Length: 365
Image (cartoon, rainbow, N blue to C red; front, side, top):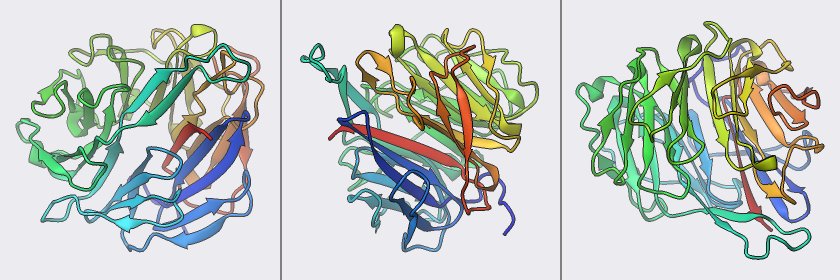
């Protein structure tokens, strides 16, 4: 079967393994269709199970090793409470059909008072009960009870009903600071949990695909035609950054703060196998030697701090990129700009269609 175009739907996958002793890594890969596949080992032993709906799935968010949501076409909103083995249909509250494109729950991280102990984690992270979904017609919905009910938010954006929101990001340690991006260069933010939404000047009219924040102030947006935007004031204003990718679309971006040697890292992927990273909060960018020339649609990294080091250091399969024709690549090395230790390796799969999203949750086991 030929590859579907970006946004035509996804099929979720799960791969679960023990990571660095006391940390559990849960990887969820989204693939066209409506079948869940649970991974028994790194890249073999995939066992399919049905989601139970016929509509395509477009995005997901795991809030811990067991609980998560998937969203998709025709108002589909489903929750798992057993690590993606089964899914239950939930109601978003919309009476008409809406294609949901994005879902986000903020992480809350707290220092570990016993961090100095051998083998101890530097911090503990988990998600709260507040989350957001976005989609067609400029619709934003919010839950404050872990998805039992969802309330529509007014974006206060002129012409919002003609715009599709593509992604939503709730800033770490805050359920009130949320950013939404979408068609026509649209960027929205709220600092009061959605009571009011403010449109930002994006300096572009291209479609924006993803948004990510290092902290409450520093954030990034990527989109078509090689667009990469940065803010240093919490989304009040945005500036275009030069990355060296030319007009190649950037499909996804992830930002990881306080990592090895107290360094931040931002990674983006996109068209033609593009992988770029920045170790100076997006001021300069380095191009990685990619594992593929196929389009890459998303990435994920084990971002926890263990013994004061970033997980990918000398650890295989601690980061993933996914993309066209079933492409999955894993990384060994630190992924920091200019590092000679970074090596991306293609993983063989039997899937021939695009994989559009990857998400991981780490929790103390």
